Amino acid sequence: MADDWGFTDVGAFGGEMATPNLDALAALGVRFSNFHAAGSCSPTRAMLQTGVSSHRAGIGNLLETTPPEHLGRPGYGGELNNRVATIAELLRGAGYRTYFTGKWHLGHTRTSLPGARGYDRSLALSQTGADNFENKPNLLLYDRADWTEDGKPAQLPKRFYSSTLIVDKAVAYIDSGRSSGKPFFASINFLANHIPVQAEDADIAAYRGRYEAGWTALREQRRQGAIARGIMPGDVQMVEMSTTTNWSSLSPAERNQRAGAMAVYGAMATAMDREIGRLIAHLKATGEYDNTVFVFLSDNGPEPSDPMAMGALSRFNVKMRYDQSLGQQGRPGSLTVIGAGFASAAAAPLRGYKFTASEGGLRVPLIVAWPGNPAFQRGAVAPGFAHVTDIAPTLLAMAGTQVPTGHFEGRTVEPMRGESLFPVLTGEAPTVHDQDQPLGYELAGNSALFKGEYKLVKNLPPYGDGAWHLYNIVRDPGETRDLAAMEPDRVAAMQADYTAYARADGVLPMPVGYSAPAQIAANVRRTVLIPRLLGLWPVAAGLFAVIAGLIWWRRQRRRINSK
Image (tube, rainbow, N blue to C red; front, side):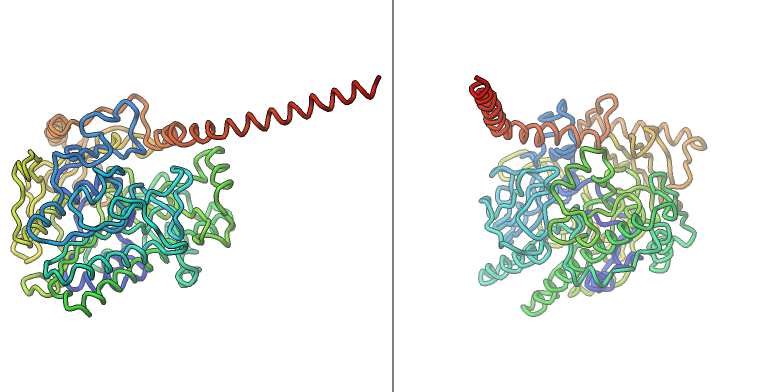
């Protein structure tokens, strides 16, 4: 799983970044052009691991964007609950070795880390992100990076690169159990390309100057690339993003900074692809390649956030904690981001990006390949609707393992909502979802209802106007033509479907005036900044006492001297 990759970031989906190993997998398997995840990481990861909707799995929202009044409510516990069985638990029960490496973000206690949810071995980061070169947190959100190995604090190298470390551990775990003769299941979860966007100097150099034409030009280039690769229809329209500044209005310094950040983004993606290639080469060398099913996806669309554009306090905090000079972009000690402009290009030709319920936030690349299975299609594009909850039942079907229907290991569990994609992978069916089957979605107040070719969607500010909009996402995947006024009956029927979904899954209404970015800032103040200030209080009090004592002493000296 990639982190925060846009729909057209992969070369085989229309992008310009070098992803030769992912492109090779795409040529051997099936690319899904209408595949949907959640708009943020934890809910997608919950659904990927369980095949169950995120609210029912206990991850109704990111902890970072959860309002205090929702914390601990059913569906909002911030970690996978015991009412779901993970794919690792199910495959381990069927005789598989199970391994996890990389970003977990589904709980941080011993009872909620990968080892407690079916994984034999694990190197896991419980947070949304961390530094890629050293054991250091995102200092704007956390006080420490919570890396664990097999449930204990991980002993990481002094210097590493996250994508390399994650694959190193995956290879070591796979090799360690080979003598058992058991098959393996590995969940490999990269930090690329989450904030902070970082890469080695040589990789950055390969992209220097690539993005000087700006994000508007890149959006059109990506649109044409997606059409050429059969991912998008030839007449796909591209929405103009209101949050995207006109490139020509930026100063030369601003353009250099933004283009440099996007160069780091490309470098980070290529570095991740190279590590995937190293894993594939290892499996070929050990004779396991042909009998391995490869699944690649992103957890959501590209990240638009820019701490340097979030107010004076945020800018001050970034400058205090990171080296933001132009020459340091993407290097150790920097906090590099691509911002909303290039995020809109990474998702092109779709509307929106991470956090939103628009297609640019939810529609992500999916590649599934089984090189040694002659029944699999090779190089095909599957245009039918698919969902992240389909992955677990698909892999279980390939492994010949039963999908739980209500009970597992003596406990009651949620039945999987997803469907096996195997008929699509073999070309037997264009989709496994019935045209009349509604599928609801909600995260931080941004909501959608999918039904056949149609999507009803609502985004709260600052991502939208809080109203429902209707699109045909087969004919208009860029969500450029709102059909709500033309089809009121369809809107009403789909609103009723959404209400039924929200009631069944326990979706809580957001507080009045809620905004996800504002909630992140409030939660950081409550959980990080205030404790930091309180921690500094004894030092400040001591310093104040020393200064006060010096002032008193000097006054006493003056009085004595004046006599």
